[in-house]
Image (cartoon, rainbow over all chains, first blue to last red; front, side, top):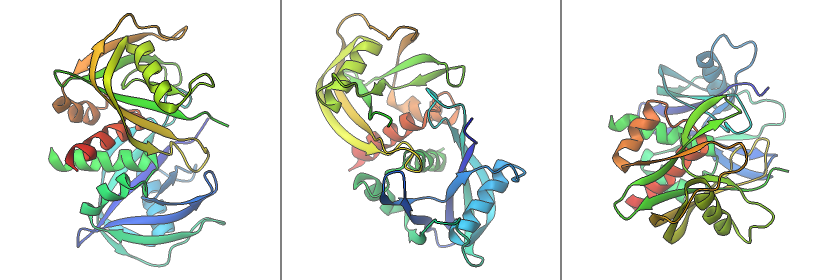
Length: 141
Length: 141
């Protein structure tokens, strides 16, 4: 059974979103994503996993955390879920510590540019786009 | 290798979105989704697959079709893509013809209610939420 996943919309005090540019072996391409990954058995909670992933992939920590949504990555075949957290007041807290073989680069973008990055196909990961949708509908409500 | 997928944001002449309520064996739950599925070997194109899925799952056809986005369902593990089509002028064209074992019910909702259905967790499928995001950023551009 696939583990549950988490991802993080991390926003700095200046309102910029923390993205990671990453080489994905599945598609053989470089992608632009938000930080995220699997909930490990050692993680006490999805929130703990989200904090760990943000720190490992970007070196960032954040002052305020809030769960903003849960999706089923693929309910036809999988039973796992992906929980999205909003991390506000994000700041560089140290060096990133990516998994063996991960090549990551931190990219800060303003929220107004996200739509264009999705439209242009630079952001193509379904779970990332779903997370951005969660964030957006949350900002409106 | 997983086949490519398609899904469809189908909008009627009155502006309502065509959703399907479906029992998903993966999660053992009833879900609310937009029509969609795998591109079969017999489909001449992703568009042909999208038209077939809309018709099979809902009995609807549509007057105008346009590709609005492509996502990677899970670039960490899979190489397939999911293409979203916008189908405008959707209308009931006959009986639905679901696959053996699929139990589907057509539900028409106004676009203004979609945000609440996502927030409430009634719509949880990541690829559906990604498709709604594509539609939304397209409406703005």
